[in-house]
Image 1 (spheres, rainbow, N blue to C red):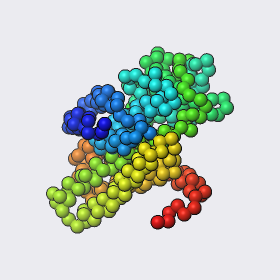
Image 2 (cartoon, helix red, strand yellow):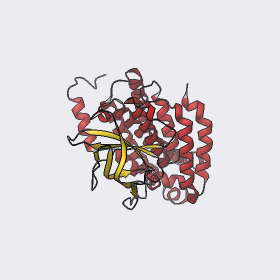
Image 3 (cartoon, one colour):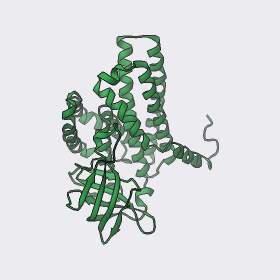
Image 4 (cartoon, helix red, strand yellow):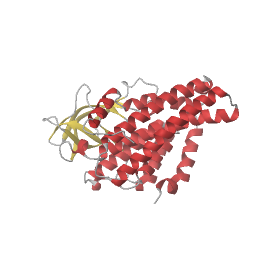
Length: 337
């Protein structure tokens, strides 16, 4: 079944209604739309199920309207994929999930006797997500996962540490747990070692890419309405980069579908780096080509321009390039035709 085609019209209608809403109404509409997307996408293909490109298409489509919504939806889908991959399908329900995997913070999570205490930083959707799949380090320093029901009275959220204008609508918070009941998931390090860890990382890049495509569409429309050679030059440069990036998404999707039990880490790190570079070019060149007007007068354009630079900082930049080099070193003749 082609998921993109089967739910496309319904999603387009919902996204169109959301985009045309007044700014003050969008916070509530975003949560309502997230709930509807969660319900509609129950049959969304998991990574390694043979249709991962359709999954990325949906993320990109949503991201072209609202990156905060895409971030929250992708996180929900990632949580369900992790549970499925690690053999905990029975935990999957109709609630809205998130993956909270940021490390650090003033008081890292401590787990004892299935009770959780500490502070988890960078928790997106903390005020309305219903369940979280959280990472923590055990006493041996190994990565572990647990499930927390966020309706428990022992949990408090603090939004005061998020100062960015971009991605503000994700309602990202520090979350404090005080002897909160949790359920342990999987073996030590199984979260990081599973192939789906990298398959999911590519899904995040699909969100970045979807926002970039939408921003370039503003330039394309401007070139159609009021053409000049300078705008066309920028559009040509970006068409070049978008096409290369799109082709690499398709290539990586075929790799994953053909060999789903491999992580394809090197190719996915390259995909994320390529997508980041493409997005940075889009932000710079679309801004130069169109000037200040859409930043000031078009709500969708302005929000995407604020959100995208924040979201792509989930890339690890120089560290990723170093890791790509390490993964290339054992191979010979990688780049020969």
